[in-house]
Image 1 (spheres, rainbow, N blue to C red):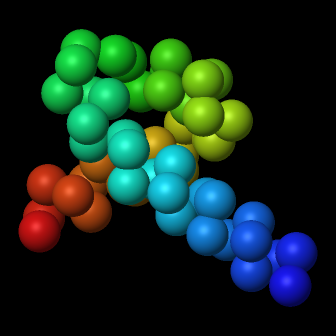
Image 2: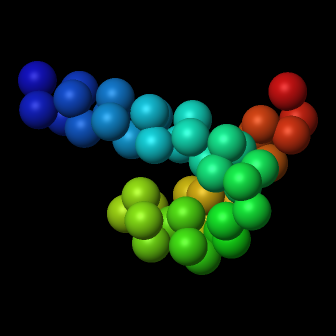
Length: 51
């Protein structure tokens, strides 16, 4: 159950990436604030732009 909660939390963070990028935050700053890797943030941004 804990793993499911962690996955849901991570998905929520990844969904906020495009919004934060639109406000002018850098990929590095978003990664730092959300506790994600820079690569995860980049992937989330790319997925959003391809949708």
